[in-house]
Amino acid sequence: MELKTFTSQPNMTHLFPKFTCCVKPSNFQPSKQNDFSLKISRRNLGLILSSGELIFRTKNANAFEFGLVAPDQTIEEAQNEVRVHAQDLLQVRDLLESESWKIAQKELRRSSKLLKKDIYTIIQSKPGSERPLLRKLYSTLFNNVTRLDYAARDKDGPEVRQRYENIVAAVNDILSRI
Image 1: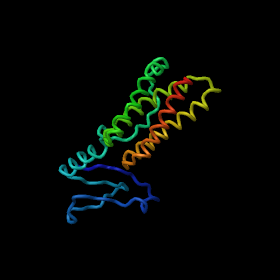
Image 2: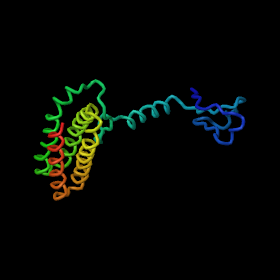
Image 3: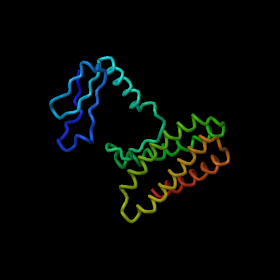
């Protein structure tokens, strides 16, 4: 089985060396074309494909998701759901007080992701004169969420309490303005 990865141009042969894998030197015959090929056995191909699935699997990742706009979410849906998602974010307090740090981090990330999409959709629907203040509050809120996540990771109780109080103030401020 042979995979052709690059086709070289005559003046670029020094930039891309020819790589071969799983070929005995006695059987190796240089190609007459100016192409680069990678020879892989079926067993190695299976290993490569299965390791690629392990590397690129994202369903178990617990990191923040950066997709901000839900294309199928309307402004009305965002306005109806924003208070529910804000309440979910604030309910992380019980987990933080019980010092269930890992569970609190997962719940914080899940609820903040949903709230972030709702608030972003609402901000985009507002007139241009109202957006800068809402964006500043949005930034303050989610910067504190990130810092709370780091404080929970470090199991820093006083920092967790301070960041949680900042989040409560920011959520109340945003909800009163939208």
